[in-house]
Length: 388
Image 1 (cartoon, helix red, strand yellow):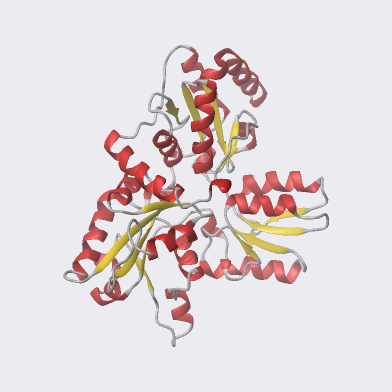
Image 2 (image 1 turned 30 degrees about the horizontal axis):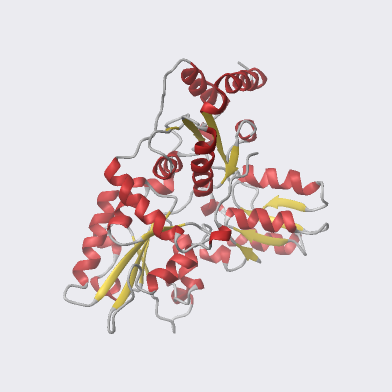
């Protein structure tokens, strides 16, 4: 079937299934799929909106056009009776896959071992772009999830001691999973000296270290691990890693007056050079609020940038991607109209395929980590339902 025929068949199946099905489309998804979405947003916001909207509609199934960890999160925050479906099980996330449960346990044991007999409270934080297993580990050990927009709030909460205030003479240490760049950029914003800054200025002492799970002892000496205030996990986003300082330099040289705005999943050397940095929602809001004549070079996924550019052009705002390389989420790109139609066809025949279901014990612990984060977010800024 060609794309037009697929689109027509999807529309027909959706009309047949009605409110029994809710389709979620992530911002990074390709336009051919997003056109069918009832709700669009980033991963956690989509899950939160879906939980509300599924109850309102009485939906039986959520089709998440995103990647695997996003579908897991949707299963964690929605009613367990709702089927969460991922159209292609090959749509994973390389960053989430960089932090495995057993490797995390090994890191945790190494950290606790170097502080044996000391009054040190270790608090784990995981970016929401992580597996349910990692979220559960963090929830079990008194930590919290974070998003790119609220990582600073979660850092501050953890530095205060997390679930209970620090006692006199007690030290806190943070373990941040799985994205080293969001962790490093957030740590710097909270006043910590990163290893990147220390390498550039020998007079500084690094307060952050990088734990590399494929190296013995994480690639660190016992002293390095002991002395660090923040332990960063050696994970990264394959999309945002593609943006480099030389791309910013090119914009400065060839596009005078153009603002550079990047996601904090970019490396510190890129974030430090940018005019603005923030979450996907921050980037969208900045561009949509910009007056005519504004010009932006954006360091984030290409499908989102192209969508923003098309909308902004009608208001006289210029938007381009920071790098000319194909900065796309290749795993999310695996979800297409053919896979979407297939899962809809199966639902129409009473069959649920590719259901993502988190084990109840992991689900409860992961929900703890998510709820601790949500308790820190002002109610006015939490996700609200907006049906596209």
